[in-house]
Length: 63
Image (tube, rainbow, N blue to C red; front, side, top):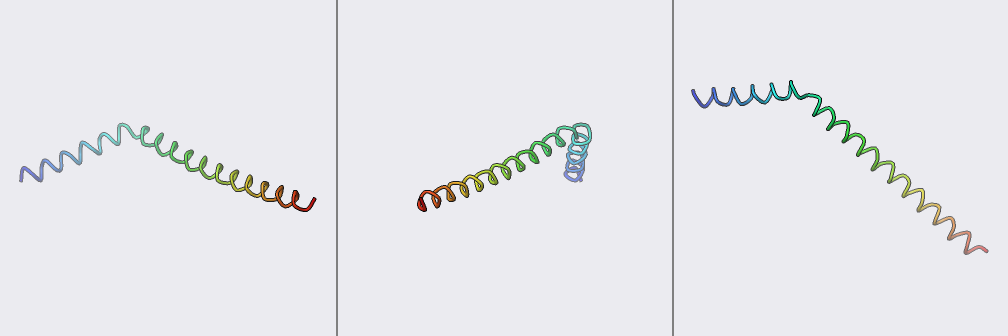
């Protein structure tokens, strides 16, 4: 029975910590969202740069 009580107290302590420090988890989530957005943005620019290079090569071959 002591083990069950110990697990219950550990879960309660974890929930109290999350409840009192929820802003930390919010900042982590916001940072992760910005990280994903930045990766997607860089991937788009890389793809655009690759297309521009391909067009320049085609134009250079034609002339």
